[in-house]
Length: 212
Image (cartoon, rainbow, N blue to C red; front, side, top):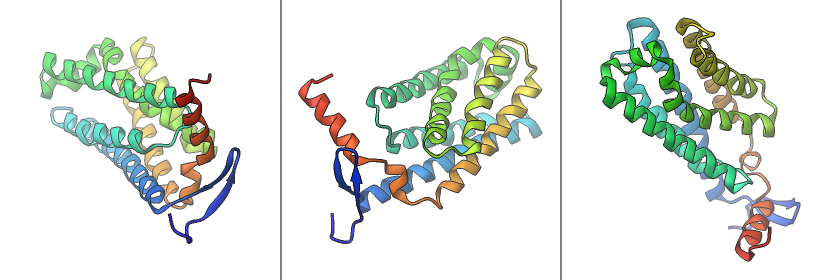
């Protein structure tokens, strides 16, 4: 901390936004943008030339989502841990799909056998959780669009009420909204993403003392 670091009055006392905080926020925003670009590219490749190699985009998508969840600021630690757990479950599901069907047929199997959504869906649930957090904090329309479109697309396909083409289109729209959401965040002061650090300190103190 330096004397140049801005100070704010929080709910439980003053707090300071440091260079480390700003760096963490910048990394979070870049990771979120990587998620959106990877998902958009993968879906576009799947739509244009098939899914034989589109599965490779899962790698930067998963890495970006994991880093975003590492650097995101969420007051409720159990919720933060739950999102990380959902990502882990989704990764296990993708691994099972890739091993069972083979990498080049994995997306085709996912399209033709909607029950696989139960296995890979938790990863998108974690992404939906980020969208909900962003809407709750900033009321951005693209965030609520992402939060609604992903569950609608996946649940619609899982219940076979929606065809694979429409599901793919809705997920593509959701991925574009994610890119828009991530890019717009670069114009926001880092303090907005960090949140009230006095609340984090208070909750950590409550947890350390065992106070409910």
